[in-house]
Length: 303
Ligand code: NAD
Image 1: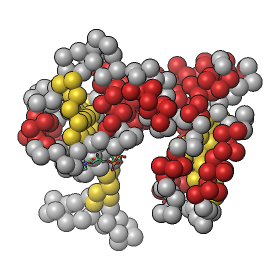
Image 2 (image 1 turned 90 degrees about the vertical axis):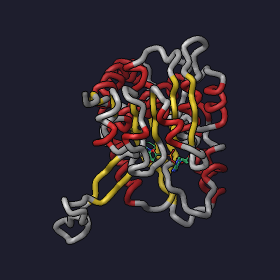
Image 3 (image 1 turned 120 degrees about the vertical axis):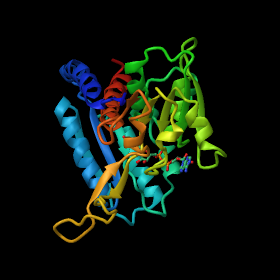
């Protein structure tokens, strides 16, 4: 029987609707959450992403603003701008927009985000609290994917989970979330580019998370029958016609579409649940960004 779709939208909508009264209450106390996106230079992709952040924030009553520096800004200038935002009591959350220019170290800058304004959950303090299973601010995509799984499996006890991808913002925090309960944790295996036999690990997983950013990486034959498959990858690939040739748009350029890392048509014949891309983890990432922004406001205002 083909798999059921694990749709992230209704779960994300529920999280957002639960935030509404909390945001109203904070606003009534003069503590409206205020998220600022800090960016350097002009980047078309990140502009689109920031516009989306703005509409998502405004939809739930979170104030949103952008603070841009020129492409030529130095690392010190960016850290100074970040420090000013850290010290500004009107700003309750900061998102450091990617990409940064080559001459700036993302890692150095991230280290300077005030942990209580770290809506992405990426500072050493917040990641450290996740290690201690005592977190308030976890990386949005990882915790979003975790919530999707919890919607099907409230207890992860005895589940063999394979995570493909070990980045600091997705794979590693997801592994920690799999281990965050004293008695109900799953048993995670984390694979990466250096893993010897990827299929060996994916084939024995009751739950398979994939976050590699490689379209077509996971074939149907690599999935355990009945597994839950959560595809986090986002890839832009050409649309092909029935002869395998690229389809062109009205401007004569190759048409593209968004896909995940899993070969969806094959996987759905094998697994029990599978997330669509887009529409699976993506909406949860947004919902978690909003939730973290509210949490940051509560932390700063001691509410
Ligand atoms: P990253 O590039 O930082 O990490 C990729 C990881 O995949 C690395 O650990 C690498 O070792 C592993 N990998 C790459 N090729 C592999 C292979 N052939 N076999 C096994 N492992 C392999 O990426 P990231 O920031 O963690 O993002 C991963 C994917 O998730 C990307 O497609 C990204 O666009 C997507 N993403 C989606 C959301 C969302 O909201 N849905 C949010 C963030 C990232």
